[in-house]
Structures are given as C-alpha cells and as structure tokens.
Length: 113
Image (cartoon, rainbow, N blue to C red; front, side):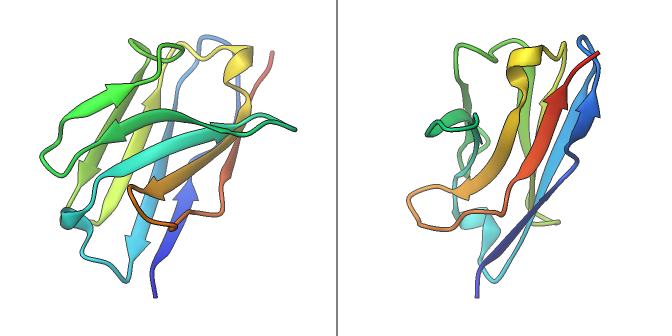
C-alpha cells in the first residue's frame, strides 16, 4: 500500500522560509517522478514543482526562483524548500506521485505577519 506523508508546514512570516517533506512507503520511490501541488481554499490544486527520476526539475512561474524541489532516493523522500515566502503562498501543499492517483494528506502553510 502506497503512503505519502507530508510534514514541515506551519506558520511563517513573509520573507521567511519553510522546507516541506514528503516521506513515501510502499513504492519503489526512485522509479517515479514526484510533484508538489498546492490548493487555495475553494480552488483546484495547482502544480508547484516537479522532479523527474533523473532529478530534472520544473517550477510554476509563481514560485520559480523561490522554490527548490529535491529528492533523496535513499530516504524515499521528496522535499520542497520555499524561500522569500509571500502571503499568497498560503495554501495546503500536497505531494503527488506523477502519473498515479497517489496523494499525500496535505500540509498547511500559512504566511502571515
């Protein structure tokens, strides 16, 4: 059974940083691309960042230059570092196994002074 568990969310001030983690189990992690999405209240989930099995990355325009997605295949974990946080980064962040229906439960990020 595939499980994804996000952590690292919380409340941060504008200009601050957070690192989100998504630990996985029940899958051969290194064989899958991984993605981070975020969802604003009442909206659909939007792709934030993607990392391929080879470590190639892509970012949404709204976070490019402020976010870094990375993976540790030995720990079966994908990370999202968000710097220079803005109030508009406030959302629930989900990790997702690319091309599957596997999602984490989400972690809330709130950016507020």
